[in-house]
Length: 445
Image (cartoon, rainbow, N blue to C red):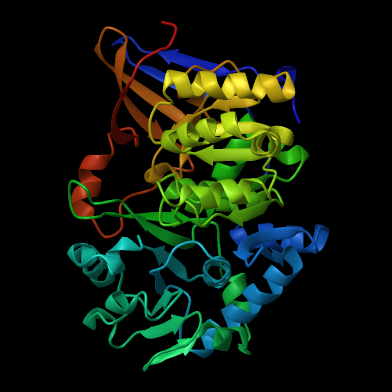
């Protein structure tokens, strides 16, 4: 565990312009960046082959996948994809949520230059949401579609847009489908495809929620994802000091979990435990059960999750002990953390540890892979989003007194939406900064 004095101080550089604009940047340096996600996997399969990478509940315990086994399975599935006609540059739509096979598949695809397109499970499960899946399928024209279960995701799998697409399911396969195990028996030579993957190779496409318009595809290159993890560790050096242990329920079609949590475990040799619970009535008990079994080093959640956790920890000393025992870092996103929840976390931490682990947030978007600004010096208050991470620039355009339009530019920022030329023309300014649509103010003007 890391004490308050181990945290960095903010290193903020400000370029004031005559018109009142400001360019904010970071004084932190960036470590050498991995060329692709496969480099991370090889690193930890070599250094700590027996360490847990992914884990999912299985009966009373966990089904754990080590880094060594993960690499073997990724290479086998990559060969299986080539065997079945999925080639570099193709797309794979993934209908189901987090799972070990999902994780292996997306890394196998990335290993040979194939991009995955994870979508919200609701797009297959809720009839009214099906048009969004149809839009994504028509936009990306996938070579393959994957689902954890053929029956559960039958509505999505049966779309006419997938009629001539390879269909893979984990478990019993229906007509016109093959089981995931068949990919694990792949024999194709993957070396040429692997060697052709560059930092600018497309790794995945994440679609925006589409709550106010048609979902937009946000390309995620290997470089965007790899540099973003180095931006995290530049701000949070304790990530490099010991491998993170993360318990997460969050969906992988969202950048928070699909990039930030998953890649953080992989980049730093950590373990990602998949929580099938959620912060909703009837499912949160599963999360609490899992927290009694896993001692996380970092916690990443939304405010409602922390509100429910604080309430539960007030009544359960063992749960409180497990949660705080190894904890370095408490991170929230999606909204500001209510003051009573923040205070509750601090009170419980002091009672258990005599100190409060770093409790903070950041600002980011799917378009920034996701972290762009982070509060990392350890004295955060709710609502603070921090300052730019290494090599990220923020352009602030004055709106009124201590209120600024936020635009960003950097190696983790997308070049443009997927096949949206009209949208792209209006999304960037004349200096290459992306227009975020958000407004910010200084916490201490």
